[in-house]
Amino acid sequence: MRLVLALFLASGLSAQIVSPHPHYANHEGDLYTPYLFTAPSRVQQIHEDLVGTPRLIQGLSFRRDGSLNGAPHPSVPAKTVTLTIDFAAAVPCVTATTTFASNATSTPTRVFGGTISTPASWQVPAASSPTDFDLRIPLSPWPYSGNGAFLWDAASTATSTTDRVLVDGASPSFFLFAWCGYQMHGSGCTTANGTFEVRGTGQTLGAPINGFTVKVTTAGGPSVAQSTWLIGFQALGANLPGLCAPIWPAPVASVTGATDAVGAWSPFFQLPMNPAWLGLGMEMQVAALDASQPAGLPLAASNGLTYRLAPMAPAFSVCSVQTSTAGSTTGSLLQRAAVVRFD
Image (cartoon, rainbow, N blue to C red):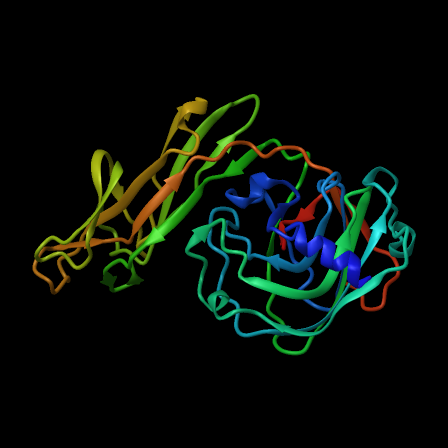
């Protein structure tokens, strides 16, 4: 066994890889799963996507869902979970059943047993989509030969708080839409409703529409205020005397409207499908009239936002069996998967 591990390490086959498809390294999944860290639960995930390449698996990482119907994943107070993880060779998804034991074709190997805690980064709302793989579980090294499917089987029990943690997930047969990607920059002005924030909430729409809905949503802006959505392709981050936040984009277009009583506004526009737009970053910000600002100008500005149009998700060969019943030997067989990263 030591010789096998040494050969894997020497060959460098323990590099990071995102599953169920490399697409999800840079793009949000279209679904989520409430299991794993909402205990008790048991999740078994079968992977055929990595067939062909031997690798030594030493870590398994998860990320929070970044877009919950366009809203960010809410904050998760510190949460500790008692968890076991087993790895084994597996049947392909086409012959998988709802019975956990029938899906393993080798004796399972216990690669983790203990407690894990949600990271501090999860204690604030998500500021990007996709989020980072910032919950890594170190594993006893498990050599995958590259031949055939394999599975991991995780059983958990919560030991603190009952808050749900929604882990990013995806389906191989979901072609209705894909979430946009975004990254927030800096902080917006403080208003009577809180901190002025803007996030990307748009979608790439599949057949028969085949287009992009470019959309943002604000929170914490001034109440019932005339507002302008600034859109450009170059980030400035320039300070303007008298304004409580930097000007983020060099605008080439704008959309006007008004916030509601709690400072929310969701402007959008639509574009026909054009692959040339995919991956192009648009720089955005929202500004609104606000006479209460103490800095000089009667304006409040949001954080800056880098917004990315996303391609539709690809098909993949990963499935899962899930249950929220403690000690269950069976679950629901689903054509969906938690988005994970192996290293």
